[in-house]
Image (cartoon, rainbow, N blue to C red):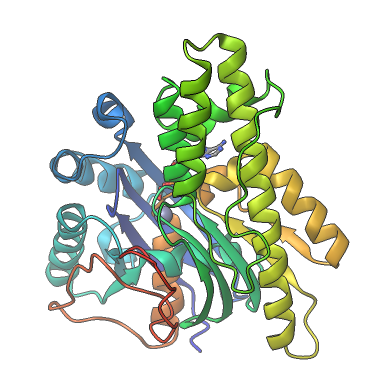
Length: 360
Ligand code: KG4
Ligand code: ZN
């Protein structure tokens, strides 16, 4: 593996964050973030209660060039001084991905630098190496608005998917819960804020509890929440707080059970030597109740729990640059024909989860 310093520009446009960052791989193997610019599009999508793909793609066109310029300026590097350009090529919303990919390819071509097409999920998966110097192997819980997966990260490029969601992603479930309770978008932080004022006294189901494969299913929980809300309507502030607390508690129970199951499968695979580590990444990992649940099971099972700081847990371009660095250091780069991919599973050999939709 190459041990020269490597400096990459990373570009992220797979969803509703327009992001550019400069990251350097130092000869000691550690990463350094020279700049990390994220231009969120929240206000553009808030009125719709979710990301509108066409609006996102158009916003990336407007926001990406200034974001790259800012990232280069803050890192104080020129195109001459970078060793390559990495862009998220999927999975994600095609329109946005094409904006980022085309920009990255154009820069690579104009500057004669290598281009790396990065899997957005791989970037999340490898980010603890950048934030905490944690090398694989580890167990990863990836929970965001678009993804809900339990994976064994064996090495860069080598992943085993243990669990996925059969329907909604966990962040999506929080967003839908917030929407049906009349709260703002994104829903996760709103639900958490209201839950802090309430009691988990509404009976809600714990879907998939005890199932041998660590899959998730969240649609039924959302429906049960809707029914409980309708039964109490019109809702007082107190009702909303109690419903939020109950929803969050149900989610925490489900996550605890599914992660414990995944830990057993991970331990069956784990080679002699390394101490087990559990990584939680994605926007939902910011949830305090979830963190407490993960802390507790990690402590009980002798795992080190690593949660990258919020800015690097949610979508960002530093993680894209870091994944690009890892690939480039292994001599891997991509041609100009590299496509944008709506779906791009990290573990293509994973058996289909029974009843799962396209997100699995
Ligand atoms: O990783 P992220 O920023 O973007 C992607 O979806 O890729 O995750 C955003 C998701 C949203 O669904 C949001 O509601 C959820 O993460 N989220 C939370 C919290 N903060 C953000 N969910 C629960 N509790 C939170 N505190
Ligand atoms: Zn993401």
